[in-house]
Image 1 (tube, helix red, strand yellow):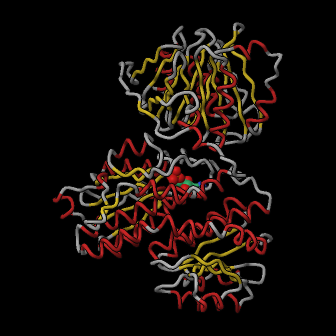
Image 2 (image 1 turned 45 degrees about the vertical axis):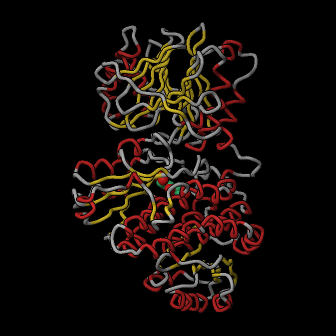
Image 3 (image 1 turned 90 degrees about the horizontal axis):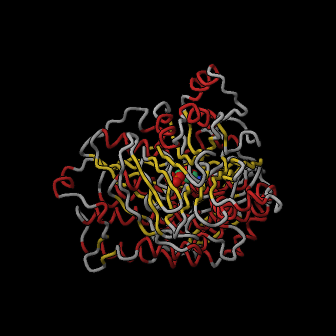
Length: 611
Ligand code: M6R
């Protein structure tokens, strides 16, 4: 959720910190703050609202702040306490001039607050983070690493922390448990952030901290220790994407840029992974030993939000083609319901960020229960990628917009490849496999053909802009598309939207249909279309306007709906992708016409690192 940046080096810290915050603003954007070492102590500036408001506070006459070469900064997604200036980070603790920023949740903050209050500490904010600042202060005896190490032993919960002490100028101390910390190693400078997008402008050399690591960073030295104060070695790795990839590149919004990047993103996802000769997919991260394969009983797919919707496509494809029993489960539910899972199950955790708290918890639960666990992750070096140890990277490039687009289509591409791989190791013939390879390789071009209809889709959006509620329906492979279409519309346009199986509508939701409630129906040509068209007629009989996603040239489907967006003909398992792209564009244009803040929808954050 929140974004952290920290800098120590020989250059002015403030521009680096503000630029870093702008890059991380997608993680949370209800308030922002900065703290820098100055000869007179630590100066803190904070503001409610976006980073631009914080930048406006840093007047040019504040020479000491402008000249500081060491500082920390934060952009917040509120958990404890509303988004006010007082609750904004950084928070200061006690008399030793401890100041810190934090991403995560201190679960035992109530108890710690009472103890610290009894010791005479006074609290200004409602946050759990201020508790941490006072706690560190209470342990401070001249060494910030020692104080933080001692304080963290008393803390339950998750954190990524960057900390300063006015008594140790130029020194940053950072720590992680459950919330990511990346250290960018530059020439005579170090930039720390919640993710690589905030450091890529300065260096490509990144060290990813592990849980329980605590690092002391000065201009030329990075000293990483375990929670028991034992030195640990963490290798730097190269960030393999460019700074341009995280820019808007002339598009009005990141979301639109990312929608248009999908043909290339999918090409990158499948590159080098298709074996047309053998009619299979090469995904070494999903290689099972002959014994594991023979004993494989079930595939369990876990994820949240869009990633879970992609997982549902995986479930269908895995059962459809590979004959492998597959189930999707909400990651949030997985560990609390004590699932039956063991060594004959392959658990696939899907996550764009690789940091989603519930998905990570599901991974740990599955590992504890002895399952084979693989990650399907976009962000290289993220926690899920590292903890699972095996899996497949999406290679979709950085996804900045809160609404996930290219991650979904890359996830589905990988899941189709996985279905192909498992099918070929079971019943599928080489000929069928080769056909499947061709179908997957055709996907980028199918997406290009939908993107070419952008203007047409923008015109259709005008008819649906004033609704307050909408239903998305589909069946078979198009059911997950309906769920994803509804999720996109609600999160960026604030129109209430629900995705339903087309047949399920009659079991309750149809009561809500009327003239002002449109239905978006996935009517792609293939098995189930006729039944969906029957459902379309039922909706129209209740006065709902129906926008159909139809297959190009399908006159019957076009005639059955009020408006349509056509997508190129292809089998339904690949039609998932162009159809979803059409719905992404529809939601984008509706939200744009409604004047919504598309890349930063209210109340949301890009990666949900709290439960
Ligand atoms: O990073 P993850 O894929 O684990 O994130 C999961 C969800 O939080 C995410 O897909 C969310 O639903 C998106 N905002 C949807 O657009």
